[in-house]
Image 1 (cartoon, helix red, strand yellow):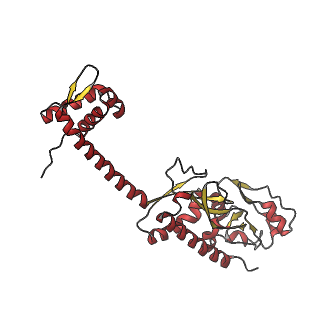
Image 2 (cartoon, rainbow, N blue to C red):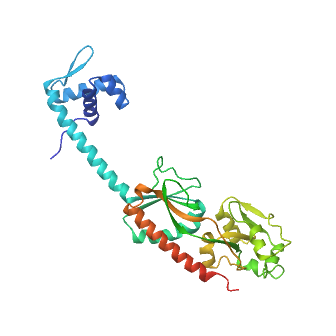
Image 3 (cartoon, helix red, strand yellow):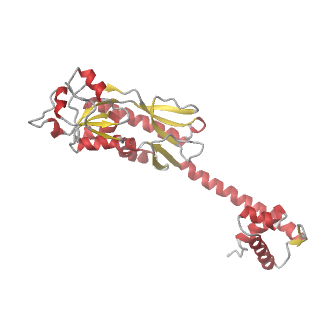
Length: 307
């Protein structure tokens, strides 16, 4: 059966005008002109074949037909709004939006995310790469992965991954005949690659007792993944964070020429508001993330140089 319904715009115009008792205030609410509201109501009255308002000098008064029509229409609008909210909420319950730093997203999270999709196919994941802190009150973000000491007031922070900092390079760079990398002192003959946020060549060289290597020289990058990519390309030796080079070490694109490592002061954390922390989609993601981190740390221990 085909439903022959009036225009939805006309119905909205009538309901707003009846609620406000004014075409002008209804126009303000619906962001249209007063003439448009008047035209829509008139068209609805012609469609129904009865007047809905008595138009007085300073007011609108519902006719008996208008009084019968308005509550039914309001109930219909309330049902539509409730159904819309239910459908929208169901989608929000399935949608997981993650804010994550670009380097960690590219080098660690993205290569593993397919396993989360396989484990939780009903959850729709969205990734927003960003260096800045998330304002959960203003942004449609469910969870953030951040690097720090875990001190974000008012938020729940679960430690995900700790890491070390150590030199890495392309395999052929370490075995070059004229410039081998057999000892940390050999770094005098190589270009150093720097991450401008946390990796500290001076601290690492201090642990080895090596002198005569200028810890400030070389190439500096403002994104950690660029440091890693430069090392893979053979541009020099990078002082890299273990989480960001794990997959390249595992695949043989990079090697660790020396065993000495610095324990990083910061860690990766899963951060979210306390009031949403136990939602099923966040619980599933937290469990998966911690399991992946444990696997990565086991693999990292196996990849460490034996000497």
